[in-house]
Amino acid sequence: MMLVVMNTQPAPVAESLLESAVRTYLGHLAVERGLAVNTLSSYRRDLDRYVAVLAVRGRDTVGDVDEGDVLAFLGGLREGDEEHPPLSAGSAARAVVAVRGLHRFALREGLAAADPAREVKPPTPPRRLPKAISLAEVERLLAVAGPSDTARGLRDQALLELLYGSGVRISEAVGLDIDDLDQRDGVARVSGKGGKSRIVPIGDYALRAVQAYLVRARPQLARGKGEAGALFLNARGGRLSRQGAWMALRAAAGRAGLCEVSPHTLRHSFATHLLDGGADVRVVQELLGHASVTTTQVYTLVTVQLLREVYATSHPRAGV
Image (cartoon, rainbow, N blue to C red; front, side, top):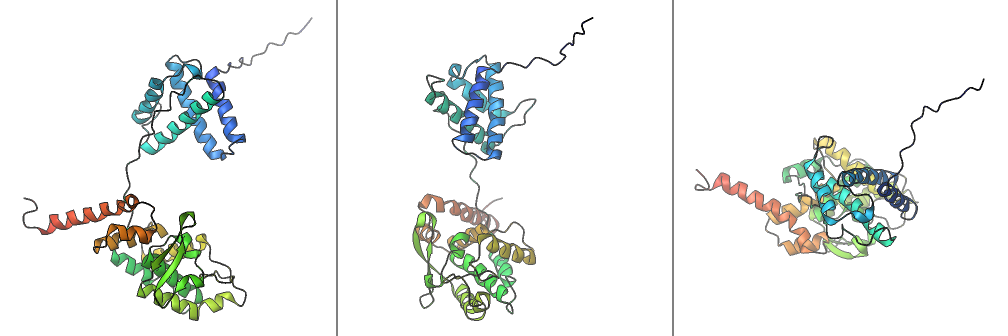
């Protein structure tokens, strides 16, 4: 008697041509472009959702898709459905980027005769105003930047005073060499984005803190083997890293009772307080090292809001 074993496993579902195109595209991103695993996972989720929408709309291949399909997908992302909550502009933009990449790839590989996503623009996230803290909060932070009786405390005091007093980026601050400082004129030459150099003034408070650090603290940190020329040193005598500078700021913010203070917070506060004091936006642009004044003008939104609040609470005929 022959025993017949029945296969109870469900037959594998055949991969659709759309799914095949997505799989090929993701493989291209992984092998040829070297995208990170997390990024690939995000693209896969977005494109799986895209394929599901296209299937409902009766599209069998990537070549069948038109611009209306892409726009419908984008609209669905923003509106949400029973299975998916509405996505923010930023998250929807990421999904549209994945879709646009898929269709560019399909056109280049001959899988489609046209690119229906070419003219579909990702939604623009709302402009976020830079975070700034008040002058009183800055003073509270700097007052506890570091104990003046230790080498690391003097270093941290000089670092935070410099970040706020000159508005430099954290990478620019830790990249400074002693020779970049002109203590007589109170300026420093920093190397910004794209290797572009600029001169920034150093306020009296920051200059005094830097001078105290150079005289009383840096020689202790260097221990005769410090990195030649580096302004800010770590405890081992090497150049202070961005992470080390971050930790110094975070520790000071904790002591000052301030939340969510970053090096960029000090940079934003520097710009905002200058504009509040009447500085021209183009001057602030130069100090920040912005390539375009448009970037700097984001800060004016903060000061305009301040002016409105002052007017609303101070002017006798501002409101009923």
